[in-house]
Image 1 (cartoon, rainbow, N blue to C red):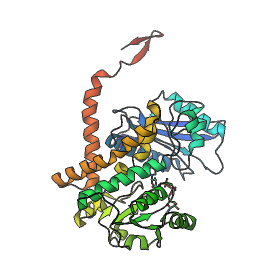
Image 2: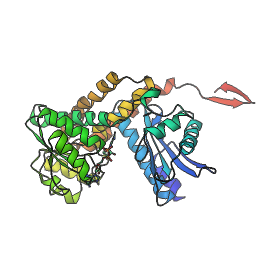
Image 3: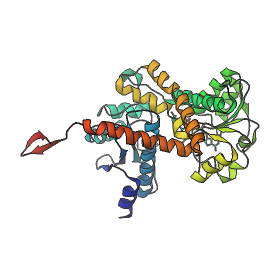
Amino acid sequence: MELMSTITEMGHEEVVFFHSRDLGLKAIVAIHDTTLGPALGGCRMLPYKSDEEALYDVLRLSRGMTYKNAVAGLNLGGGKSVIIGDPKKDKSEAYFRAFGRFIESLGGRYITAEDVNTAVDDMENIFQETSHVVGIPPAHGGSGDPSPFTALGTLRGIEAAVEYKYGSKDLSQLSFAVQGVGHVGSHLVRMLRETGAKVYVCDTDAGRVRHTVEQYGAEAVGLDAIYETDAKIFAPCALGGSINAETLDKLKCEIIAGSANNQLDTDATGDELEKRGILYVPDYVINAGGVINVAIERQGYNRERATHQVDRIFDICKHIFSIAQREGLPTYKTADHLAEKRIEEVGKVRRPYLPARRRPINGRHTLS
Ligand code: NAD
Protein backbone atom coordinates (compact mmCIF):
# COMPACT_ATOMS: atom_id res chain seq x y z
CA MET A 1 0.00 0.00 0.00
CA GLU A 2 2.84 2.36 0.84
CA LEU A 3 4.33 1.84 -2.63
CA MET A 4 1.05 2.74 -4.26
CA SER A 5 0.70 5.92 -2.22
CA THR A 6 4.27 6.95 -3.16
CA ILE A 7 3.36 6.53 -6.85
CA THR A 8 0.19 8.55 -6.36
CA GLU A 9 2.00 11.33 -4.48
CA MET A 10 4.65 11.73 -7.19
CA GLY A 11 1.92 12.04 -9.82
CA HIS A 12 3.04 9.36 -12.30
CA GLU A 13 0.79 8.43 -15.21
CA GLU A 14 1.86 4.82 -15.38
CA VAL A 15 4.30 2.44 -13.68
CA VAL A 16 4.89 -0.97 -15.22
CA PHE A 17 6.75 -3.93 -13.69
CA PHE A 18 8.28 -6.47 -16.05
CA HIS A 19 9.50 -9.94 -15.27
CA SER A 20 10.89 -12.53 -17.65
CA ARG A 21 10.70 -15.98 -16.13
CA ASP A 22 13.15 -17.50 -18.63
CA LEU A 23 15.85 -14.83 -18.54
CA GLY A 24 15.51 -13.63 -14.94
CA LEU A 25 15.05 -10.07 -16.16
CA LYS A 26 13.36 -7.75 -13.66
CA ALA A 27 12.62 -4.20 -14.73
CA ILE A 28 10.41 -1.24 -13.89
CA VAL A 29 9.34 1.48 -16.33
CA ALA A 30 7.94 4.70 -14.89
CA ILE A 31 6.11 7.12 -17.17
CA HIS A 32 5.77 10.37 -15.27
CA ASP A 33 4.13 12.77 -17.69
CA THR A 34 3.37 12.62 -21.41
CA THR A 35 1.69 16.01 -21.86
CA LEU A 36 4.47 17.18 -24.19
CA GLY A 37 4.95 13.87 -26.01
CA PRO A 38 6.08 10.29 -25.41
CA ALA A 39 8.16 9.84 -22.27
CA LEU A 40 11.91 9.68 -22.96
CA GLY A 41 14.57 8.75 -20.43
CA GLY A 42 17.43 6.31 -20.01
CA CYS A 43 17.59 2.77 -18.69
CA ARG A 44 19.71 2.33 -15.55
CA MET A 45 20.97 -1.12 -14.52
CA LEU A 46 21.96 -1.68 -10.89
CA PRO A 47 21.93 -4.53 -8.37
CA TYR A 48 19.44 -2.66 -6.18
CA LYS A 49 19.29 -3.89 -2.59
CA SER A 50 15.51 -4.11 -2.72
CA ASP A 51 12.61 -3.71 -5.14
CA GLU A 52 11.50 -0.66 -3.13
CA GLU A 53 14.87 1.01 -3.70
CA ALA A 54 14.57 0.38 -7.47
CA LEU A 55 11.04 1.69 -7.54
CA TYR A 56 11.95 4.86 -5.65
CA ASP A 57 14.89 5.47 -8.02
CA VAL A 58 12.79 5.08 -11.16
CA LEU A 59 9.99 7.28 -9.80
CA ARG A 60 12.42 10.07 -8.87
CA LEU A 61 14.45 9.86 -12.09
CA SER A 62 11.42 9.77 -14.40
CA ARG A 63 9.96 12.85 -12.73
CA GLY A 64 13.30 14.61 -13.26
CA MET A 65 13.14 13.76 -16.98
CA THR A 66 9.76 15.50 -17.27
CA TYR A 67 11.38 18.73 -16.06
CA LYS A 68 14.56 18.29 -18.08
CA ASN A 69 12.79 17.58 -21.38
CA ALA A 70 10.31 20.41 -20.81
CA VAL A 71 12.95 23.09 -20.15
CA ALA A 72 15.08 21.84 -23.05
CA GLY A 73 12.15 22.67 -25.35
CA LEU A 74 11.65 19.07 -26.45
CA ASN A 75 8.26 17.70 -27.41
CA LEU A 76 8.83 14.80 -25.07
CA GLY A 77 7.54 13.79 -21.68
CA GLY A 78 9.46 12.25 -18.81
CA GLY A 79 10.08 8.59 -18.16
CA LYS A 80 12.82 6.25 -17.04
CA SER A 81 13.46 2.55 -16.61
CA VAL A 82 15.52 0.52 -14.17
CA ILE A 83 16.74 -3.04 -14.55
CA ILE A 84 17.31 -4.80 -11.24
CA GLY A 85 20.43 -6.79 -12.04
CA ASP A 86 24.20 -6.97 -11.93
CA PRO A 87 25.70 -5.39 -15.07
CA LYS A 88 28.86 -7.49 -14.65
CA LYS A 89 27.01 -10.84 -14.60
CA ASP A 90 23.55 -10.54 -16.12
CA LYS A 91 24.04 -8.75 -19.44
CA SER A 92 23.49 -10.71 -22.67
CA GLU A 93 21.96 -10.19 -26.07
CA ALA A 94 18.82 -12.13 -25.08
CA TYR A 95 18.46 -10.20 -21.80
CA PHE A 96 18.34 -6.82 -23.56
CA ARG A 97 16.21 -8.16 -26.43
CA ALA A 98 13.69 -9.31 -23.80
CA PHE A 99 13.81 -5.80 -22.34
CA GLY A 100 13.24 -4.47 -25.90
CA ARG A 101 10.08 -6.58 -26.20
CA PHE A 102 8.82 -5.12 -22.92
CA ILE A 103 9.40 -1.61 -24.23
CA GLU A 104 7.62 -2.52 -27.48
CA SER A 105 4.58 -3.65 -25.49
CA LEU A 106 4.16 -0.07 -24.22
CA GLY A 107 3.29 1.00 -27.76
CA GLY A 108 5.67 3.98 -27.92
CA ARG A 109 4.51 5.72 -24.75
CA TYR A 110 8.05 5.27 -23.40
CA ILE A 111 11.33 5.60 -25.33
CA THR A 112 14.45 4.22 -23.72
CA ALA A 113 18.13 5.24 -23.97
CA GLU A 114 21.50 4.72 -22.26
CA ASP A 115 22.06 5.54 -18.61
CA VAL A 116 24.23 4.29 -15.75
CA ASN A 117 25.62 0.81 -16.62
CA THR A 118 23.93 0.58 -20.03
CA ALA A 119 25.74 1.37 -23.27
CA VAL A 120 25.35 1.71 -27.02
CA ASP A 121 25.73 -2.09 -27.47
CA ASP A 122 22.80 -2.73 -25.12
CA MET A 123 20.69 -0.19 -27.04
CA GLU A 124 21.56 -2.05 -30.25
CA ASN A 125 20.19 -5.28 -28.75
CA ILE A 126 17.02 -3.49 -27.60
CA PHE A 127 16.69 -2.06 -31.12
CA GLN A 128 16.37 -5.61 -32.50
CA GLU A 129 12.95 -5.78 -30.82
CA THR A 130 11.64 -2.22 -30.77
CA SER A 131 12.08 1.11 -32.52
CA HIS A 132 11.31 2.94 -29.25
CA VAL A 133 14.98 3.32 -28.33
CA VAL A 134 17.51 6.09 -29.00
CA GLY A 135 21.27 6.30 -28.53
CA ILE A 136 21.75 3.43 -30.97
CA PRO A 137 24.96 3.07 -33.02
CA PRO A 138 25.51 5.39 -36.01
CA ALA A 139 25.38 2.32 -38.30
CA HIS A 140 21.63 2.11 -37.53
CA GLY A 141 21.10 5.85 -37.98
CA GLY A 142 21.79 6.62 -34.33
CA SER A 143 23.86 9.32 -32.68
CA GLY A 144 26.28 7.17 -30.63
CA ASP A 145 27.96 8.51 -27.47
CA PRO A 146 26.03 11.53 -26.07
CA SER A 147 28.87 12.76 -23.83
CA PRO A 148 30.46 15.25 -26.27
CA PHE A 149 27.04 16.92 -26.66
CA THR A 150 26.49 16.99 -22.91
CA ALA A 151 29.90 18.67 -22.61
CA LEU A 152 29.04 21.17 -25.34
CA GLY A 153 25.77 22.07 -23.59
CA THR A 154 27.66 22.45 -20.32
CA LEU A 155 30.10 24.84 -22.02
CA ARG A 156 27.15 26.91 -23.34
CA GLY A 157 25.65 27.04 -19.84
CA ILE A 158 29.01 28.17 -18.45
CA GLU A 159 29.24 30.92 -21.11
CA ALA A 160 25.73 32.10 -20.23
CA ALA A 161 26.60 32.27 -16.52
CA VAL A 162 29.90 34.06 -17.19
CA GLU A 163 28.23 36.61 -19.47
CA TYR A 164 25.46 37.18 -16.93
CA LYS A 165 27.89 37.62 -14.06
CA TYR A 166 30.82 39.44 -15.70
CA GLY A 167 29.27 41.07 -18.80
CA SER A 168 31.24 39.09 -21.40
CA LYS A 169 31.28 35.42 -22.33
CA ASP A 170 35.04 35.41 -22.88
CA LEU A 171 36.40 32.51 -20.83
CA SER A 172 40.08 32.93 -21.66
CA GLN A 173 41.02 34.95 -18.56
CA LEU A 174 39.05 32.79 -16.13
CA SER A 175 39.91 29.72 -14.09
CA PHE A 176 37.80 26.58 -13.64
CA ALA A 177 37.71 23.66 -11.21
CA VAL A 178 36.37 20.51 -12.89
CA GLN A 179 35.40 17.75 -10.45
CA GLY A 180 35.41 14.44 -12.34
CA VAL A 181 37.08 14.02 -15.73
CA GLY A 182 35.21 11.02 -17.14
CA HIS A 183 33.25 11.02 -20.38
CA VAL A 184 31.75 14.50 -20.04
CA GLY A 185 34.38 16.15 -17.82
CA SER A 186 37.31 15.34 -20.10
CA HIS A 187 35.55 16.84 -23.16
CA LEU A 188 34.71 19.90 -21.08
CA VAL A 189 38.33 20.31 -19.97
CA ARG A 190 39.46 20.09 -23.61
CA MET A 191 37.02 22.80 -24.69
CA LEU A 192 37.86 25.07 -21.76
CA ARG A 193 41.58 24.73 -22.41
CA GLU A 194 40.98 25.57 -26.09
CA THR A 195 39.71 28.98 -24.94
CA GLY A 196 42.98 29.51 -23.02
CA ALA A 197 41.35 29.27 -19.58
CA LYS A 198 43.16 27.80 -16.57
CA VAL A 199 41.64 24.47 -15.49
CA TYR A 200 42.11 22.55 -12.23
CA VAL A 201 40.98 18.92 -12.30
CA CYS A 202 40.46 16.04 -9.89
CA ASP A 203 39.17 12.50 -10.17
CA THR A 204 39.19 9.33 -8.07
CA ASP A 205 40.72 7.66 -11.14
CA ALA A 206 44.38 8.76 -11.36
CA GLY A 207 44.64 7.65 -15.01
CA ARG A 208 41.87 10.02 -16.03
CA VAL A 209 43.54 12.91 -14.24
CA ARG A 210 46.85 12.12 -15.96
CA HIS A 211 45.11 12.10 -19.34
CA THR A 212 43.71 15.65 -18.95
CA VAL A 213 47.00 16.94 -17.56
CA GLU A 214 49.09 15.45 -20.37
CA GLN A 215 46.65 15.97 -23.25
CA TYR A 216 45.12 19.33 -22.39
CA GLY A 217 47.46 21.00 -19.91
CA ALA A 218 45.09 20.93 -16.94
CA GLU A 219 46.45 21.22 -13.37
CA ALA A 220 45.78 18.30 -11.01
CA VAL A 221 44.55 18.97 -7.46
CA GLY A 222 43.33 16.66 -4.67
CA LEU A 223 39.76 15.41 -4.23
CA ASP A 224 39.14 17.80 -1.31
CA ALA A 225 41.31 20.62 -2.61
CA ILE A 226 39.08 20.97 -5.70
CA TYR A 227 36.49 22.87 -3.60
CA GLU A 228 39.03 25.38 -2.34
CA THR A 229 40.92 26.47 -5.44
CA ASP A 230 40.88 30.11 -6.55
CA ALA A 231 38.79 29.16 -9.62
CA LYS A 232 35.82 31.44 -10.24
CA ILE A 233 33.80 28.58 -11.72
CA PHE A 234 33.25 25.20 -10.07
CA ALA A 235 32.07 22.49 -12.49
CA PRO A 236 30.76 19.30 -10.81
CA CYS A 237 31.06 16.54 -13.42
CA ALA A 238 31.24 13.46 -11.16
CA LEU A 239 28.46 12.24 -8.90
CA GLY A 240 25.40 13.91 -7.37
CA GLY A 241 25.23 15.70 -4.01
CA SER A 242 28.68 17.28 -4.15
CA ILE A 243 27.24 20.66 -3.18
CA ASN A 244 26.14 20.18 0.41
CA ALA A 245 26.33 21.75 3.87
CA GLU A 246 29.91 20.56 4.33
CA THR A 247 31.32 21.65 0.96
CA LEU A 248 29.43 24.98 0.84
CA ASP A 249 31.76 26.57 3.36
CA LYS A 250 34.85 25.49 1.46
CA LEU A 251 33.78 26.92 -1.91
CA LYS A 252 35.47 30.10 -3.09
CA CYS A 253 33.84 30.13 -6.53
CA GLU A 254 31.27 32.63 -7.85
CA ILE A 255 29.54 30.26 -10.30
CA ILE A 256 28.57 26.56 -10.11
CA ALA A 257 28.04 25.08 -13.55
CA GLY A 258 28.70 21.43 -14.38
CA SER A 259 27.19 18.32 -15.90
CA ALA A 260 26.53 16.13 -12.85
CA ASN A 261 22.96 15.17 -12.04
CA ASN A 262 21.42 16.17 -8.67
CA GLN A 263 24.33 18.43 -7.70
CA LEU A 264 22.53 19.98 -4.71
CA ASP A 265 21.94 17.63 -1.78
CA THR A 266 18.79 19.55 -0.78
CA ASP A 267 16.76 22.56 -1.91
CA ALA A 268 18.04 24.38 1.19
CA THR A 269 21.54 24.25 -0.32
CA GLY A 270 20.17 25.95 -3.46
CA ASP A 271 18.62 28.66 -1.29
CA GLU A 272 21.93 29.12 0.55
CA LEU A 273 23.85 29.53 -2.73
CA GLU A 274 21.40 32.26 -3.70
CA LYS A 275 21.97 34.02 -0.34
CA ARG A 276 25.73 33.85 -0.78
CA GLY A 277 25.54 35.30 -4.30
CA ILE A 278 26.91 32.17 -5.97
CA LEU A 279 25.22 31.74 -9.36
CA TYR A 280 24.00 28.15 -9.71
CA VAL A 281 23.20 26.89 -13.20
CA PRO A 282 20.47 24.25 -12.63
CA ASP A 283 21.88 20.79 -13.34
CA TYR A 284 19.12 19.42 -15.51
CA VAL A 285 19.17 22.55 -17.68
CA ILE A 286 22.93 22.68 -18.29
CA ASN A 287 23.33 18.91 -18.80
CA ALA A 288 20.49 18.49 -21.32
CA GLY A 289 22.85 18.33 -24.34
CA GLY A 290 22.90 14.53 -24.33
CA VAL A 291 19.13 14.10 -24.29
CA ILE A 292 18.66 16.83 -26.91
CA ASN A 293 21.14 14.99 -29.13
CA VAL A 294 19.50 11.56 -28.82
CA ALA A 295 16.01 13.03 -29.21
CA ILE A 296 17.00 14.22 -32.68
CA GLU A 297 17.36 10.57 -33.76
CA ARG A 298 13.58 10.43 -33.86
CA GLN A 299 13.50 12.93 -36.72
CA GLY A 300 16.42 11.29 -38.56
CA TYR A 301 19.73 12.08 -36.93
CA ASN A 302 21.49 15.21 -38.10
CA ARG A 303 24.64 16.34 -36.28
CA GLU A 304 24.35 19.95 -37.39
CA ARG A 305 20.77 20.23 -36.12
CA ALA A 306 21.80 18.57 -32.86
CA THR A 307 24.66 21.06 -32.38
CA HIS A 308 22.38 24.01 -33.15
CA GLN A 309 19.79 22.83 -30.63
CA VAL A 310 22.38 22.13 -27.93
CA ASP A 311 23.78 25.68 -28.46
CA ARG A 312 20.37 26.97 -27.35
CA ILE A 313 21.19 25.97 -23.77
CA PHE A 314 22.97 29.35 -23.66
CA ASP A 315 19.68 31.24 -24.24
CA ILE A 316 17.69 28.98 -21.92
CA CYS A 317 20.15 29.62 -19.07
CA LYS A 318 20.13 33.39 -19.68
CA HIS A 319 16.32 33.31 -19.63
CA ILE A 320 16.34 31.48 -16.29
CA PHE A 321 18.83 33.93 -14.74
CA SER A 322 16.77 36.94 -15.75
CA ILE A 323 13.48 35.50 -14.45
CA ALA A 324 15.23 34.46 -11.21
CA GLN A 325 16.52 38.02 -10.75
CA ARG A 326 13.20 39.65 -11.60
CA GLU A 327 11.22 37.41 -9.27
CA GLY A 328 13.84 37.15 -6.51
CA LEU A 329 13.94 33.34 -6.73
CA PRO A 330 16.82 30.87 -6.64
CA THR A 331 17.70 29.58 -10.11
CA TYR A 332 16.87 25.93 -9.31
CA LYS A 333 13.33 26.93 -8.39
CA THR A 334 12.99 29.16 -11.44
CA ALA A 335 13.89 26.25 -13.74
CA ASP A 336 11.16 24.11 -12.12
CA HIS A 337 8.61 26.88 -12.60
CA LEU A 338 9.61 27.26 -16.25
CA ALA A 339 9.13 23.53 -16.85
CA GLU A 340 5.74 23.48 -15.14
CA LYS A 341 4.60 26.57 -17.09
CA ARG A 342 5.56 25.05 -20.45
CA ILE A 343 3.81 21.77 -19.65
CA GLU A 344 0.68 23.63 -18.58
CA GLU A 345 0.60 25.98 -21.58
CA VAL A 346 1.53 23.48 -24.28
CA GLY A 347 -0.85 21.01 -22.65
CA LYS A 348 -3.70 23.44 -23.30
CA VAL A 349 -2.70 23.79 -26.95
CA ARG A 350 -2.38 20.08 -27.56
CA ARG A 351 -5.30 18.65 -25.64
CA PRO A 352 -8.07 19.36 -28.16
CA TYR A 353 -6.00 17.88 -31.02
CA LEU A 354 -5.03 14.58 -29.44
CA PRO A 355 -6.20 11.78 -31.70
CA ALA A 356 -9.32 10.06 -30.48
CA ARG A 357 -8.51 6.79 -28.72
CA ARG A 358 -9.55 3.59 -30.35
CA ARG A 359 -11.48 1.24 -28.16
CA PRO A 360 -12.61 -2.23 -29.15
CA ILE A 361 -16.38 -2.50 -29.24
CA ASN A 362 -17.91 -5.87 -30.07
CA GLY A 363 -14.53 -7.08 -31.28
CA ARG A 364 -14.21 -4.19 -33.78
CA HIS A 365 -12.18 -1.00 -33.34
CA THR A 366 -14.12 2.20 -33.47
CA LEU A 367 -13.37 5.83 -32.62
CA SER A 368 -14.51 6.98 -29.19
P1 NAD B 1 31.74 9.07 -15.98
O1 NAD B 1 31.47 7.94 -15.06
O2 NAD B 1 32.36 8.81 -17.29
O3 NAD B 1 32.64 10.16 -15.24
C1 NAD B 1 32.52 10.48 -13.89
C2 NAD B 1 33.91 10.63 -13.35
O4 NAD B 1 33.83 11.08 -11.99
C3 NAD B 1 34.72 9.32 -13.33
O5 NAD B 1 35.95 9.53 -13.98
C4 NAD B 1 34.88 9.01 -11.83
O6 NAD B 1 36.11 8.36 -11.56
C5 NAD B 1 34.85 10.40 -11.26
N1 NAD B 1 34.49 10.47 -9.84
C6 NAD B 1 33.67 9.68 -9.12
N2 NAD B 1 33.61 10.09 -7.84
C7 NAD B 1 34.41 11.18 -7.75
C8 NAD B 1 34.76 12.06 -6.71
N3 NAD B 1 34.28 11.92 -5.47
N4 NAD B 1 35.61 13.09 -6.98
C9 NAD B 1 36.11 13.25 -8.22
N5 NAD B 1 35.82 12.43 -9.25
C10 NAD B 1 34.98 11.42 -9.02
O7 NAD B 1 30.32 9.83 -16.14
P2 NAD B 1 29.95 10.91 -17.24
O8 NAD B 1 29.17 10.26 -18.32
O9 NAD B 1 31.13 11.75 -17.56
O10 NAD B 1 28.91 11.78 -16.42
C11 NAD B 1 29.35 12.71 -15.43
C12 NAD B 1 28.14 13.31 -14.73
O11 NAD B 1 27.29 13.97 -15.67
C13 NAD B 1 27.25 12.25 -14.03
O12 NAD B 1 26.69 12.84 -12.88
C14 NAD B 1 26.16 12.00 -15.05
O13 NAD B 1 24.97 11.54 -14.44
C15 NAD B 1 25.98 13.39 -15.65
N6 NAD B 1 25.44 13.38 -17.00
C16 NAD B 1 26.09 12.73 -18.00
C17 NAD B 1 25.56 12.73 -19.29
C18 NAD B 1 26.29 12.08 -20.44
O14 NAD B 1 25.95 12.36 -21.59
N7 NAD B 1 27.26 11.22 -20.18
C19 NAD B 1 24.36 13.41 -19.55
C20 NAD B 1 23.71 14.06 -18.49
C21 NAD B 1 24.27 14.05 -17.22
